[in-house]
Length: 401
Image (cartoon, rainbow, N blue to C red; front, side, top):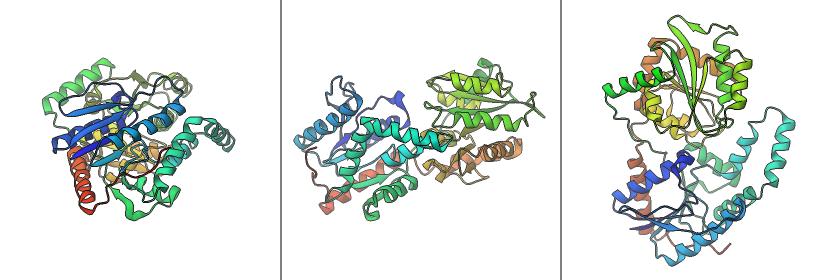
């Protein structure tokens, strides 16, 4: 089966969507598919994946995305593919899988990070003025309104709900195939070594409660809310002592921490909030931490949360995260209704500061994701491809943009 996987950018340092897409492509190849990744990212082909480059030059972002979609569609038409599976909207896609969620929801949830109605109004104007968002919205709208429409693969129920709310998209054309994550098979000795090395590097004692944030967009992922929740955990005091150790927030990611350093300093938490910068040792930080706090304003289905659960790390996140659908309150961690409800976040973290309860949640956490490996995700997609080919519904559609 010859499959075209269309995605504008696939540099895995960009985030979970790109990392998941590349792993998904490799798992499809292992199932016997001939996978061609149609992308604007320059990288060499490998024995398992063929990279089909789309040259877009040095255009502005908005023009670049539109040009990529047109060139990708032309290449796909020439390629004699059995299935065209688009991550970036492509007018000739058989399957559309918006790993970043829908454009209207992404814009709405970015506005939600603004603390006042006036700021949200200004944010809406700023979004309207950005040509890239017009192009992205136009591409997605055209694809979803196409007749016949593509089959849309939603990586969570949250994304499926977005399709119905923003586009009134036919539920019969939606297939929910939950995002995948592989089990953490790290042995106990390596986990202990990771815990010791990370904590030693940042001067944390073994009995300190280490709260972990992993994010590349600090504002959208609620890093500020996590710092405020840590302040509430302290009850406004300066000591921040637990009965058996300190409570410390470690933030891993490549965003600029300056405004959050100032927030921590203003709240008296300068020595309790640590910014590490980007790392390729995220797994080691999962093994070193006690709780992942991810009070996100928007995540279609956070890979970080799924990986943390697989590593046996209890999670506190929000309902604006599709990965929250795997979490049962009090069993694997907690889900709060809003990232702005700092008191609720602090309350759930306080519950997990109890050693016995936290250890029980940690023991159960891997079970929350044991049925959703990336290989299983690819397998279900492969079965969808076969069904569409058998039914004759996988036919090049769409028109030039």
